[in-house]
Image (cartoon, rainbow, N blue to C red; front, side, top):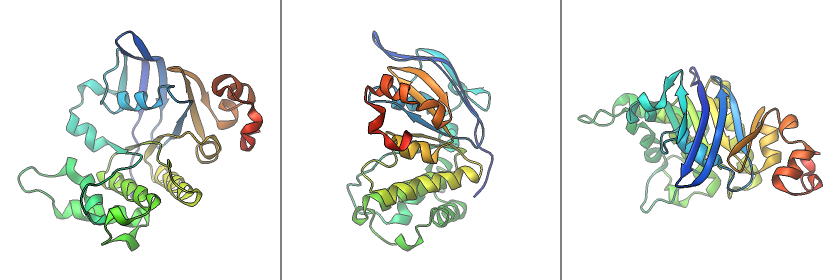
Length: 251
């Protein structure tokens, strides 16, 4: 799989729910094929920023542009074909085979009259191979480990064919091996040309797997740069309110 990643420009973005400010004056620019991780304490606004970026939430002020086109001018169906979103976990209420879940990623491309095409099925098979989950074919997703399920969800996003892949806490509840599997896969997808934007709470993992971090605190972007620049001992102390010695991988 290869392709041109999506450019994202966020300018002066603010989000308010009533009188509560969730995001304040965010400027963030992500180049095609770039790999960026949003970090920050709980309640910093990371997930809210993803919701604005994907069109789920409408900013109170400011703008989001995809390849210079305002998000507000793009049809929902086109956004779904452009941005692939990976949830942290999904609980299926009924039995589904791995390959059928991956094929769900093709829904934005389906013809409403003829349904799934050979191209859709080929894209799903290619995604299964790209993610490396061929051995899981035929398995009920509900019977997989949490790490295996997360790889299936990433394969579904890859099958969707978006030029930007967005992940909100993709390694939550995973053991170390599967955390590394998922984040190494994101490295490879960016190497294929996709733009990757993820939210992580694990700072050492974020610093190891992402060349660029954006740190949010109380709805504001307080730092943007390399892991060494963003996660300085002073910022760890100020933003997270902990002694930097408790994050030894960064000191």
